[in-house]
Image (tube, rainbow, N blue to C red; front, top):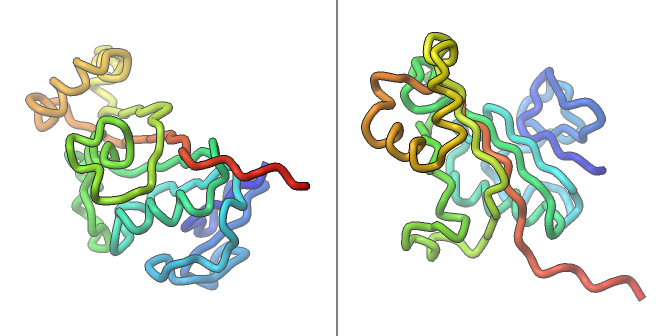
Length: 182
């Protein structure tokens, strides 16, 4: 399984190829993550990981399109970022975006009528929101993640009281399968 760890920093995912903009990291490829395309061939990865990266990029839509380009049909992208109600979302001056658990829906079937932003399509395999510890202990995190309607209610009405910590998406790239080699 070929894995690309985007923005790997010094904690590159084991067995992955790392790409980062900083040379003093564990990156195998040093490249500006806001310049497209990345110096990697189309459909060359089974998984792209972007752990605490998407909030730093200049263009979320273009970055998602690049992830889509890099993945084979059915490949998976794993994205993790602070929830916009968490203190860490705003305390880092390099964060450009503050996202919630619905921020990437534009790339899926439930695109809220905004599917024209991009032709890149992903199937949502899993969305998991971690809440602050107090709310995890009370079982609120379980409710938010087990019931999509409750998660929507929480995002709309409660998330500034019952604060989110981290969002993790696992998305599957939807593409035309490559023809078999002759």
